[in-house]
Image (cartoon, rainbow, N blue to C red; front, side):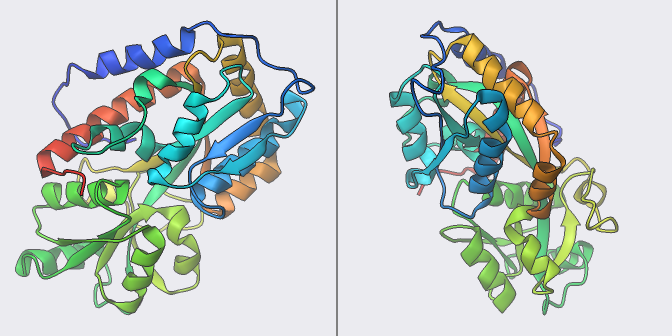
Length: 330
């Protein structure tokens, strides 16, 4: 979710229509547990934020669906090996995808990005499960005690400071590009293969700034290795009640990540609703909510139609950012 003022873009409505249309395509009835095992396919490595959400969802739906889904990690191609496996797999509701914001709203908008599916046509929004505040962080040994100090240094020495990202075209990259444009600063981009190596270089002082999911860096903040300069959404986070809010420092700039569940095109509406209701009910369990919060993630349920609107809206916003920054796939 982002709140940067933006012009109207006509194609957001066709994207939403495609997402909702895919959800209405008829298909075979949802398999009962005895017929086919339930699976959640995750496109990123075990232990990461997406994987944590997938495993919490699997536990959440175990009771309502009559069995606990198996979580399969199929990494590679920035999550699209997993997405393609779901699209090419059974459409009976037995197999779903853990679909994070980047795959659904950013990758499809990056020119030159080769992805094996059309996310608007081939995937059905089932439910949004969790949200993540983005954190603006610097190293604990950095001379910058606040984001205002860092931005002032960047204005005084254009191009001298640097920020890291998990790769070109990722949410980390685009969030920092939005910060640069809206704050009127020039900070160099250093691309990494994931948020973890970027955070390590930030701790070592090789770069000056990182904007990423709070879940990616919450342990380093708690351990004193990273300094939290701001939280990128107005709601903040219970553990850091006094953290500055990015929208108050750079008006209109808010970044919120999310992690949903999608199914393949042709997944029948009754299967979509069954999964969505199971996720909604399961995420009310206090122990599961605490597990998410302990990892820098908050429960954030949205049903199929609301989730489809979120995807369409955020794809529009990120698309505008990509075009404004002239970003292309490497």
